Structure formats: structure tokens, C-alpha cells
Length: 423
Image (cartoon, rainbow, N blue to C red; front, side, top):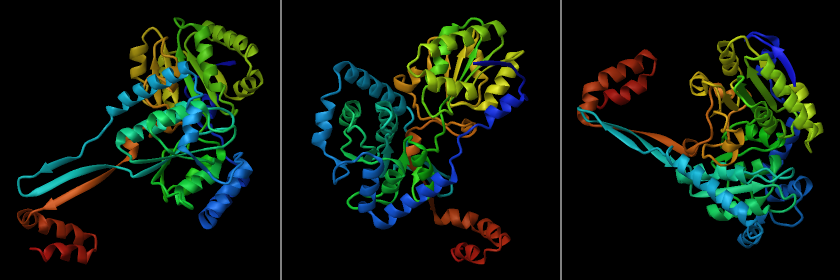
């Protein structure tokens, strides 16, 4: 990894702040055509695209409950135990996010409140093809279940069939509506429905570039969680850190495989920077993913050396990364100064994969600097808030003229009349 002395205004810092993988216009046009075809021609087109792109070899997208059960039985017992533990932790964490309906009764007959209701139907996209991701299923489904969403529908590419680990999680969570379809065609199916598949209210879950663009295209027809970009990690490390551990944590994100993942370390010690760089080289050399790691780190792997942690914190908040690890002597104090991050991992034992798989907080996090204004996926993403207003006669008599005067000042005659007639 390249070692660079930087200040917050350094060109290389600005380049990382502006990073992102912009899709080509050709891909965007392909996605729009797929969405239009599925929306207008329904299930026949969805099946056609699933067979063409997703490895579907049969005439139905639906995966039966018996097929889910058979696949789940193939999940190794130790992995079953680990997945149950992850589900328990994620559920317990997200139960703390649950919101309740509230009301306020004013002195003059104003009854105001906010009603909390879950969305009715949510679609979960679970990637397939390159790997198997039961953790993605857990992180997207559990907060929806905690929120009380009654209908969850899962879409996943058919390549290689239904993975036993995914089947086990589906079974544990009681999700039975599952379809073998991926990419833009899956997003279109969820958004518009086709055949017996009803449209959803929201689509969540990561996917390839086609799925990501499709989510952007259907937003407004349905809600979405976010447009997820390439994964990223920032490790803040001083000379108390273990350089081998820091290197391992950096590679944990660089290995994702798109070539755009960012693996960044900030340190205030040049000798530590050199040690970390040496450890990265050693681990990459022995890695089965050596070629992909080298390509990623060449462009998006850096060790920034700063003159003070004041500069380090400024850079960290400007980057607003998905994951931040703080591995310094005063880790707790330094972590308090990080304002923009999807998740913060504090201390030498809090490796990023702890959060990815098991601790409990959601691993669906804002990327590409959007942690400046976005939050992790949570129970709050699966509920609707409805305002409640009930005025008594006494309340409208007290406030009616004020309401009408504001309406008239904005040029809305009939707004004012609707109130004044009640006086």
C-alpha cells in the first residue's frame, strides 16, 4: 500500500472523498429496458430474463417450502448454531429501535399525535452468483420482522440453487415467499408485480450494478433503503496497534471484489505506517485473492500519515466512511470525535467482521460519503409515521382566525374559508 503524508486539504484526500463507481450509460439503458419489459409484459418477461441472466432452468420463479426445507437440512450444524446466534443478537439489538404511537392532549381541545404502523409488504434482495450471503438476509429481514411487517418476499438469483445457509435462515425467520430471480428484473418484479407476485412497498438489500441502478429507477413507485456503493473501511491506528491486525482488517474490505473498495489507514506515526504496509504485502502475497487485492489496493488502498489526530479526525469526517475502526491508546475519546460514519468499531478486539456477522447492529450501512446524512438500516426504515390531528370546537374558535390569516397571506382564499366558515 502506498504511504502518503497528508493534510486535510491534500489532493489524494479529496480524490478519496469524491470516489464512487459511476455506471455507464449503456448499463443504465439496459436496466431501463428490463424494467419497462417486466412492467409492461409481466411474468413472461421476468421468466425470460431470469433464464437469460440468473441461471433459472425451470418454468417457475417460486421456490417451494419443501425445497427450502430440503436445502436447510444441508446447512452444517456448526454453521446453523452460528447463524442462530447472529439472528438472536441482531433481533435483540433492533428491538431497542422499536417506536411506539404517541399522543398529546392540549388544554383547549387540541388532540395531536403520531401513529406508527409497519409497512405491509417488503421485498428483500439477496445477492447470489459470486457467493452466499446469509448475513445479508439476516440484516435485512430481522429489522423488518421486528417492525411488524406482515409480508416479506425474498428474491435471489438461481445460480447454483438455493444455498443451504440461506435456506436455513429463511426457515428460522419463517419466510416462505422466495423467488429465483436477480438483477434489474428482480427489482422490477418487486416494484410492479407480475402474475401472482404482488408489488411491494419497499425494496431493500444490496446487489450488482444492475440491481442498484434498478432501485434508483423504481424509487418513487416504491421506497428503497439506499443505493449502496463499494465497501470501505478506515482504520485509525497509532503505534499501540498491532500492524498485522490492522492489515487484516484493511483486506477484509478490499476482498469484496468490485475493484472499487476503499481500504484506508490513518496514522500519526511513520514507522507504524511502514509496518502496516509490510504486513499488507505479506498477507496479499499469501492470499487466494492476490490479483484482485493488488488491483484494488493500487487505486483505493492508502496509508495516510498525519501530523496530528486533529487532522486525522478532520479527514475521517470528510471521508464519512462506511466502517471506521479506532485502534489507538485513547480509542474511546477519539471515537467520540467521529461524526460521520456508518459504524464505529472501538479498540483492538472490535474487528470489522464482528459487526458484519454477529454483534447485532446492522451491516447495511451508508457508503460513498453518505454517512454525512444517512444511517444504518433499522426498524425505523420499515414503519410509516402518520400525523393525527383532532381539534375540538373550542380549539378551532381559539385558533381559527390565526390559521386563516396565514392562509390568506399565502394567497389561498379557500384554505382560509374552510376554517372561517367554522367560526
